[in-house]
Every structure is written in structure tokens, then in C-alpha cells.
Length: 344
Image (cartoon, rainbow, N blue to C red; front, side, top):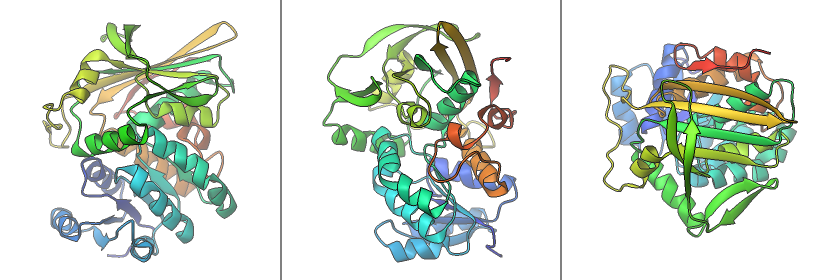
């Protein structure tokens, strides 16, 4: 099989990586599967004989270079991204190919902007971190809600999950983030990430129907606090999580997602509700769908499609809302997401 214009999926054997491989193949992309475990990659190739296997380890730059040789783009699905993002994006910049990742780790995303923006700008290579349910989707919704505004007084992103059955990768990444913070919590306030020891606060959020009014944990901080302020002038970004989902995540006995359909999706549903205010004017946008891990695949693959055919607004390192036409991007996911945007 030719690998010309193929897309590399690093971390292809993981829960989200498998969804991304399936989505790429559905769109007709030649796909190279990569990661550190050659045996697991070979088993994946038995299931999907048209994929090319190229094992690589993040502590072996030469192996990463071989994995990306001749490819058109790379999607990094391998967490913890505190460990993988730097080496894989550096390999992408050496190869001169677009890089997309699905990192939800706040510190890993902040490090991406701090450590790699200048190199990506000089290379003229697109780099889009957090192109996933957490970070990317919220950023697109916020950007679409703002419309022609480039600033806001307040940004709120509320996650209405019916439940949250975390994958082993989510748990591992969460532990890495917890250790990096020294057990502290984080918020984005007064234009900066700030660490604190405040106790979580429970309040009510009125989601679009049929979810309606639900109890949420305020300042249940997600990657939107990195992606949104990276390109919009906002003094604070606050994110919220339904109490039931937060308890699921905290529970050590909560099982991993269980597939219930032919696509491998779980029965977990979600609503992401965005509220922005500027100068006394309020705007909202929302998206609803099924399975937070599965929906990351169409988000990441749509990003790859647009990067490769030039439907971008900038180059170098940028979040989803800065790189793409947010409203058009979201509407392109019809069938994967049900989106409600302001009618300007």
C-alpha cells in the first residue's frame, strides 16, 4: 500500500486512537499506525489490513522520524501528553507536516503554546493542540458564539455529561496533571492560569432541553482555559461539570467505557453549553452528541482535512478557534454533533 499523503496516528492502539483510525479510513485516508508497542500495532493491522505499521517511541527521535517519513500529517492520540506531545510535535516540525493532538491536559497544552509556538511559526507548519472534546470543541463553540467579537468580559463553558466512564489513559493523564500541580486546583482568572486550594463549589446550570437544570461543579477546570485565551481577549474562562460525571471520574471503581453499538461507542451522552458576555450583551452556543471519546475522532479528522486542503486562517501553532472558521467547522460535523449557534 502506498503511504503517499498518509496520516500517521501516534497512539493508534489506544481507546481514542482507534476511533481516529476508523474515522480517517472512513474518509478514505491512507493511514499509518504508530506507537511504542509493535505487537499491539500488528494486531491492529490484522483487524485493518490496509494500515501501515510503523512502531516508534517518544524517547527515540529517529524512530519518530521514520514513522512520519513521507506522511502528510500526524495525529497524536498518545497520553499522557506531558510525555508525548513535545517529542511528536518536534518530529512533525522536522518533517514539515501538520500536527494535531487530542490532549485534554491543561499543563501539557500550556507547555505546547509556551515551548513550540516560535518553532512552528518559523517553520510555517500548522500545529493544533487539544483538537478534541475537551479544549477544541469548547474553543470552537466560544469562537462561533462571539462571531465578530474578538474579546469578551466573561466566558463560561458547561459540560453536561450523562456519566463519565474514564479510560485508563484518562486516569493516567489525570494523575500526571495532579502530580504536576502538587495536588492543587487551577483556574484561569485575571488573564492567567492560577493555582489554588479552594474547595469545589456546587451550583445550578440551566442546560438546553432536554437536559435542563442540573447541579454542576463550578471551576471544574478543563483545557478550554488554555485554548480560548490563546487567541481571544478574555479576563476569565470558567468551566463547569455535571456533578454526576465529576463523581464518576473521581470514583476509583467507575468502569471504562463499554461499547454498545457497531461503531464501538458507549451510551454516554453530552451537552456542551457556552455562554459569553460582552458589554452587557449575552450570546450562547451549544453542541450535543454521544460518547466524548468517539466524538473526538471527527473533530480531529475534520481538522486534518482542513489543514491539508488549506481551509485555515493562520499557520504555526493555534487553537481550533483561531485556525479554522469555527461556525463552518462545527456545521461540517452534522450527523456527529447537533449544534445550535447564534443567528447573527
